[in-house]
Amino acid sequence: AQSVTQPDIHITVSEGASLELRCNYSYGATPYLFWYVQSPGQGLQLLLKYFSGDTLVQGIKGFEAEFKRSQSSFNLRKPSVHWSDAAEYFCAVGPPDTDKLIFGTGTRLQVFP
Amino acid sequence: EAGVAQSPRYKIIEKRQSVAFWCNPISGHATLYWYQQILGQGPKLLIQFQNNGVVDDSQLPKDRFSAERLKGVDSTLKIQPAKLEDSAVYLCASSLPGTYSYEQYFGPGTRLTVT
Image (tube, rainbow over all chains, first blue to last red; front, side, top):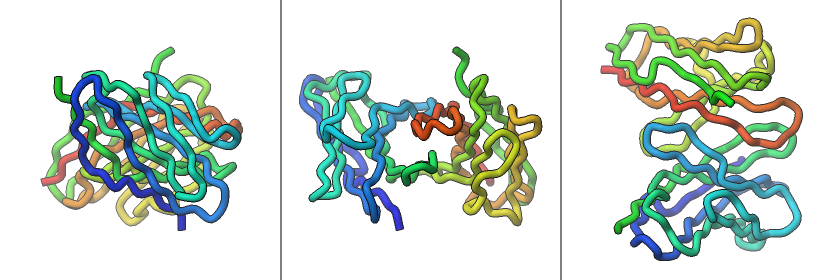
């Protein structure tokens, strides 16, 4: 069965520090992978997606993610966090050719000034 | 471009009452999704429509939940009767069909509290 694990429920970083949010997936074939962000009281917004090709993917708001097949991981990174990045981040896997998404449980990011 | 609209934003009901949520997708988006997001969990797909037809409702608790999408635009999700465990945020999303872009556009959600 397809599943997504986000091991960190809550992460706190200082503004300007680097960030890495972890995501591991379980899927029998080549997955489509996604990161969404949810700000308080708002819907989810797509940050970036990986379908194939270059394993380092650039997204919006300065985020990037790296697909590592050997580790079944798709970690999200940002070199310098801004206070406005405080939000909940969801990793998701999408079975190819279905337009469906299976979400992880999310990581809440808190940013201190 | 207007986003996905949902109403109401908040709803508090007692158990065994009924409730309905409304969603208006982005114009031209034929695919519409309803998700349930329980506190501390990721969104879980309840039902997916393409135009006014159901693509997937395998996770919809059909004994109490129902959804419709008349005329392939707006959609309503109903719970009757509600249980305590239905307390959650109900998210609506829409996307262009057939592109497999997976770029789903989400509304702000309806936060339901069942007491």
